[in-house]
Amino acid sequence: MALFLSPASEKGRATLRLGDNMWLYIPNVGKPIRITSLQSVVGGVFNNADILRLDYGTEYQTAAIAEEEGHFLLDLKAKTGAVAYDRLKMRVDKKAMVPTDIACYAASGMLIKTLYFREMKDFGNGIRRPALIETDSPLYKGYKSVMIYAQIAKKELADEVFTLNSLPRIEELR
Image (cartoon, rainbow, N blue to C red; front, side, top):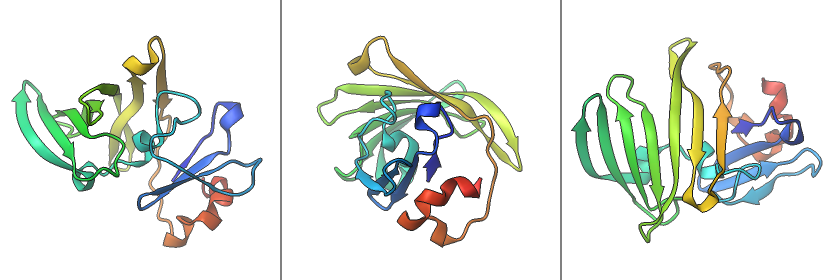
């Protein structure tokens, strides 16, 4: 589940992934609407899959692994056609074991976009991850999108929170 805090025009929007289904809650609409993984997030280069589909081990199989100084290079192939990208070329920091960049490809072999994970930050409570995610795409020349994580907090939430009925109240959970 994700909640948008800014820009002001998007504040209060929430997205939820339930299996292969994704939903968007817009406060003015008042009820969740089904969305696809390839739809753009708030008109930017990021799409819903970039934010809510983060289980690479489940959705991709390793086609090749290589090493370079300080990094693993992974060539990942989608296990099914239900994912947003057919192939990922991922560079992973050996020490932190997190991606530093991911090139995302269509089944045709065309580069769709590249995601860059930057500014490793210790958010406390054992949470260490990039505080900045940036993406660009040859399909959107001259544009890029950036997500900045100012704070991440670990919370224990009941399974019932991750339902369509809870989306309108997600901001209360902050």
